[in-house]
Amino acid sequence: MNRRQLEYAVRLAEVRNFSAVSNELGISQPALSKQIGALEQDLGVKLFDRGTNPVSLTPAGAYFIDEAKRMVFAEDQLLRTMEQFKDGKAGRLTIGVSPFRCVSLMPRIVKAVREQFPQVEVVLQEAPSAQLRHDVMDGKFDFAILNLPVEESVLEAVPIETESLVLVVPNELAETLPASPAEPYPAVSFADCKDLPFITVGEGQEMRQLFDKICAASDVHPTIAVEIAGGITAAWALAYNGIGATVLPLSLVKNDLLSRNVTLFTIADSPYVRHPAVVMRRDQYRSEAAQYAVDLLTH
Image: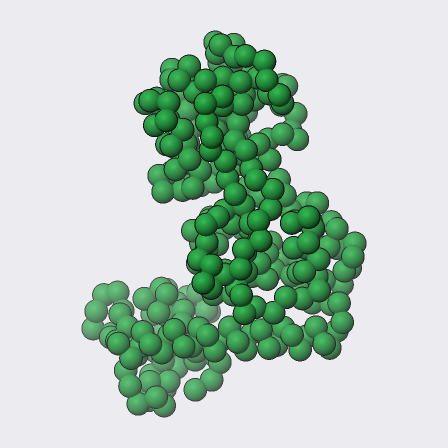
């Protein structure tokens, strides 16, 4: 049993298809099957049931994959720690982050880390929140930025600044809303927005869940003009181009050239905010560069 076989087995357990995994790994399907077969022969048990479609794990396989993930993670942590001992401040800092936070939050952090640790390569792994939650559990990042709550029995979470939400409305539609003066943006009751065309992300995404709560609290049955399967940066771009209104974290839009196309409103009757945090595995090695980035984000 070797590291390569462990990685192949873990990936096959995730994808459940020999052909797809072989294409992804750049090896032939017979070679992949041979590696898995050799692993099963060494262990003396079958890990995968090849008679099902998709391929499924046997009971022994399910147990093995959980342990294999832990072994790969532990080896990665050991190698990362040794790399730090060998090269001092050199190495790689991998951060899991949503596309919107990559735009709104990461430039300042990356610039500061690169100035402090010029030999450290910073890798920003963009992914939707659900994928980030899965990958941070597997230790694929030095840390990720996620909204609370998270699984705190496995993960350590350090809160960062709370994100308030704003209503983003194209200027021609904003003129129809009865707003009242407020800081930092005029306030509008969400009930008065019931006739606006809205842009939302897909059902099940965190931002959509908050939007639905705001609508329910104000008894608004919104007209959805556009639903986006991707992230909220696309919702911002559509609103900015006059397609409809949308609800977004203020941190995404507050530094843009807002006066040209859209108006921002405080939602007067909404208590909802997002609680982002720096999240990492509790047993994970934290490099000097990673700790520096965490401190920048949380202080």
